[in-house]
Length: 212
Image (cartoon, rainbow, N blue to C red; front, side, top):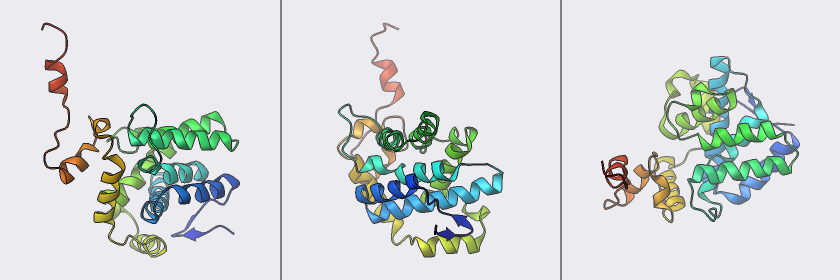
């Protein structure tokens, strides 16, 4: 029987069960619990907005959204969001999901840290982003029922999430700082490494091979 938390039924399909087992092996309990909370908060936001998100796809996107911080990076350095998105896409295709479903999850994960755009896209993509924003930085938290939030946090406690999450984030990015250019991820390096300076568009324009 599937788990029900805050009125949200956690998917219990074969893909959901396999994804749960697989991701548990890849990430820490901190990130796993965060990922399930992202699914639950995202589901609450989707319900409130009338978004008909597919629960299985939203669950898969939430579970894998930070997996790129822990899996070995691709041979070509790329954003951790893309590593996680590629990992989820491969997993879903291997487990018989449609290419459309796998692409939806890929987009939800690849865009989950991108401001403003995901909420204008499909329901699973929007709900993933909304869930991330609520659990990571508290955006939209006041819009949710207090009892539902309490149920979610009781089932998947936050612990010292603020500090532990930032440390985990930095650990997952520290070997590929250049991939943070143009993203919120550069904030992590600026916090932990005061001497870090992210590349800028101004630098790229001024150092381009054009004469003017």
